[in-house]
Image (cartoon, rainbow, N blue to C red; front, side, top):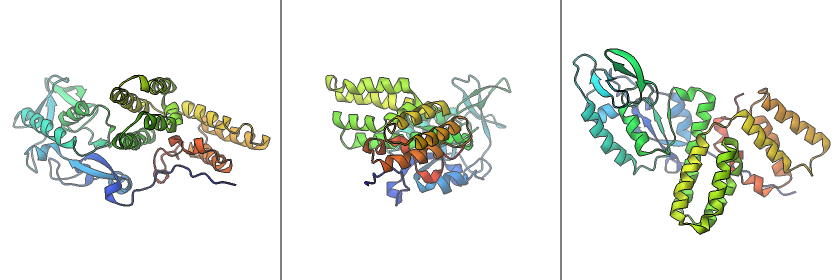
Length: 329
C-alpha cells in the first residue's frame, strides 16, 4: 500500500525561514510605553515566535517621543482625528503622520505577511479606539499608524493582540498569514498561467471553507487567464484570494467541505466506515467535537487510499498542527 505525503506546515528551522510579521514593539516586551513599561504578550513571542520573525514598531518612540512621556488621546473628527497630549494639550498629529508616511515606505521592503497591533492605542489601535469629542469619548476610530498601515497595505492580514484571545479570530488571522506567504511564494517564483492554475487547484477546499461563492468567482478568473494579461489576472486573483480567506470558515461551511471530501471515498469505504465517518462529521456539526477530529479520520483515509489530489489540498494543513488551532470546539 502506498503512503501519500500529507501537507503539513512545520516550524521553520531557523529565523531566515520564518514568516515576517510586524508587531507593536511593547507586545514583544520592549519598554516603550508612555510610563516606561511594556505589554509583553507571551503567546506572540513564545508560541507564534516559533513560526514568525517579528519587526517591532513603536510609533511614539520612532517618531521622536521620549520614554516616559505624557499620555495622549485622539480628539475631534473620528474620520480625521488629532493626536493630543492629555495635560499639556500639545498636538502631535503632524509629527505622527510624518512618521507614518516614512515608516510604511520602509515596511514595504520588509516582506511582511501580517501585523499585530496593540489594542486601544491612539497610534496603533486597530478597532474601537476612543476618539474624544468635546471632552467625551463619544466615538471610536483607529490609531493613526494603524490606519496608515491598513491604507498602505489593504490586503495584509492585520489583527489586535486582544482579539487573538478569541479562538476563531486567532485561527483566521494565522491562516491568512500563512496563506499570504504561500501566495507571495508563488508570485516570487515567477508566476505563469500554469503555476496559477496549480496554486488555485491546491487551495480549492480551503477557499470553499471560507466562501464557495468567491471560490467560484476565482475559478472563473483562472479559467480565462490565457485570454488576458497575466499581470492583471494575478492582481485580481490576489485581491480575491485574500478577501476569501478573510471570510470566517464557519462550522456549517467546514461541514460542507468535510462531506465533499467524504464523497471521494464513497466507493471504497465499507458501510461501517461510512457510518463512523458520518457520525464524526455530525458530532463536529453539532459542536460536540473540534474540527481536528473528523479531519484526523479523513487524513487517515487519504493516506490509506493514496489520494494524491486530496493529499495536496492546503485545507488539510493551512497552518502548523502544533498551534492546535483546530482543537477548539
